[in-house]
Image 1 (cartoon, rainbow, N blue to C red):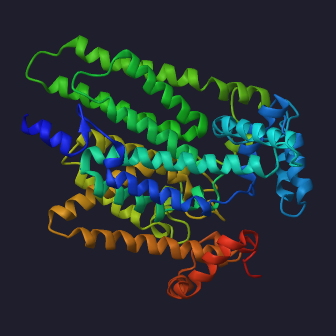
Image 2 (image 1 turned 90 degrees about the vertical axis):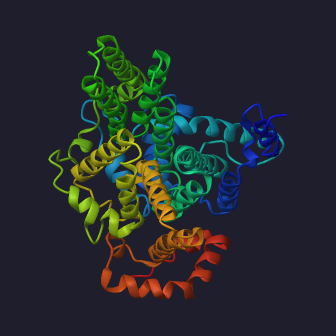
Image 3 (image 1 turned 180 degrees about the vertical axis):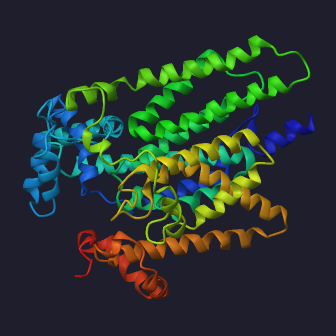
Length: 484
């Protein structure tokens, strides 16, 4: 018996395949995800959530894209809380079709449909056995289904982040980076406290696209089938959030790098070798466009043309005047709200020496996200928890953070110190989460640094009570905001 075979058996591997349960870091992440499940909120609240949910409900029950009955349901359920739904969505119809406005893309609603259908089967089965739960798509089983599905999407996206990072930096550092980027960023809010937005779904689709791109990178190039599948995943990314289409720049950078390498080579330029990746990139774009067709049809039905509502166009200034504010504004900027991101960006500089194509591709994709976020006139995401529009870039932040941890470890910093370093960012974000629960609506519009740091020091004394209220009396927790 060879030494390699003995090592394989000792590690629990057979024929080169390791059992997943032998990956302790992966198991630790799965346990963490399972422990957090009881904390996931099951409710639809904000107007964005209702727009996503309306796709699912209307397609399943009405087989149309007229959301009049969905909007009226939420408005009738609480005319004060959902007044904006009535005034901004129901009353302001599209001029060419007369249909109510829905500025949300269709992708999230489509991906919720399977679990929504299972919830319907569950309700119908319960009614056959004597239950009185109404099978109208609005009762608790349906809401629970979409909220838990979003949480599952978020966790799956994080596992893909772990798989990406593990190839470069090993298991423990990668698991630490994933846990930190979940708990120290707005992602934890939009997977646990407010899951039925598009952000968890966006995380999953973007990370799946990046994961498959990385998995199929090799010196021989992709097969045509792999290029087509990469484009299919890119189209799915676009269905969930149109601006996520900018991540398709990642394979474009790879192709550009390959062409530069061929051009600088010592041998004469092999035109066939140069043409193949270019055609592969074209195939990727074609496949993405085909998958995006349902969104084009949705545009046509709702707005009367193959484009989004004019409401969306009115929110943009493509000169991106707020790009720096998006990053550094003391009230709304990504870095002040989520300082761990600055560490992740420093990690990308470390990654440059290891993989220049990946670093260039990720850096350009991130810059494009800064550009598009800075183009929004509503760039502040006022009232939101942090800069939620960057949740789609979580995989890039995980890679960057893991790269910096790996560099610090190589410099002699012990693992316990790395964990403590990460914990500081988690505690900062946890404090902000609890302050967010206590802030009045005006204070949620941006960080008030005059009181923020003082209040962060007070949070430990309030933390236990807030967590207990969140667990035992969730509705009261959400009404915890003091009068201003």
